Image (tube, rainbow over all chains, first blue to last red):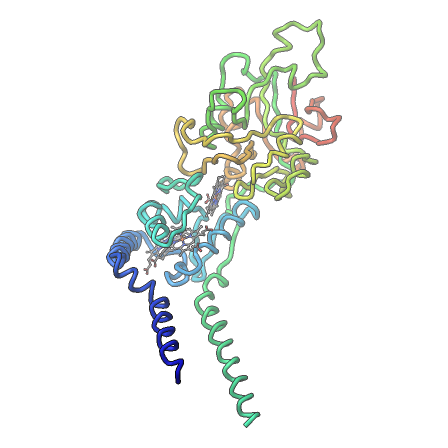
Length: 136
Length: 257
């Protein structure tokens, strides 16, 4: 049982390392940031809800919107198809700016908020309109 | 003892697998039940082609209706220098468009006569053959498309195109666009672009913007495979010119001079 100190010491270090993300977030005040993000997103979603439902259920969108957008892009540009029939049978014109961004009230109010927080930068706006606005 | 442990491990692995795949399946299911449709207004064609009637065209004056219409809907910038110019549809002196047609005895005016040029949407496009990422390809209806998302900016296609129909974005084009049309994407630094025969307008049942804008009716657009189309009746019953047919690219923009 001479290794007791080493084992316990190791465990303590291990515990500190494993919980690092949690207490580091708390210590740097990022919890507040997360809460604020949640609030802005809730606000944005409330505004969007007034215009209609998302193309797919929110849980699916949260996990797979990037996949959906890839499909939209390939269907429009490469397959000559422009209408999306959602899983619940609703029809949408497939347009990043004209549909997604338009309903969500501008990419800066929605997409960019969350993407900044998760550290992912979208280059879509180099070409696609951030305002949405005029649907063709 | 041995068998029970084995059983336990098997069951545990099975359950884990079920949990992992089942769970994600459940959340993922929605997208698998969706589908895609063509726009109901989509104009259908088997071989889209354009006829430029230079006998009617008023490009010699300062008419720029077709150029302005195209550049307006597609956010084509005005870069200000010939080297960085972005070209979809533009005016070119006749001696550059049809070098084999001019002779030294022609008047200067005739040799330099501005002629409307655009991507020829060739039946045998050399740009498509050289593209390493399939960012450019020929659609079944004949349109030579660009997928801006796949373009890596290698510019092989620019070298391959004998008509100079492709342009490279050396700089961010956005500051050089007079008024951005928010419903069509701009381009960014590092991609190649060109005329797309207004494929996004065909999807909405509209003719190309240049054709629609031309007051002189010098531009005709239609399906060459459709024997009842205007373009077919004109192309089949008159002598017309195409650019550099000796190269075998089979251009699909026809000229009446």
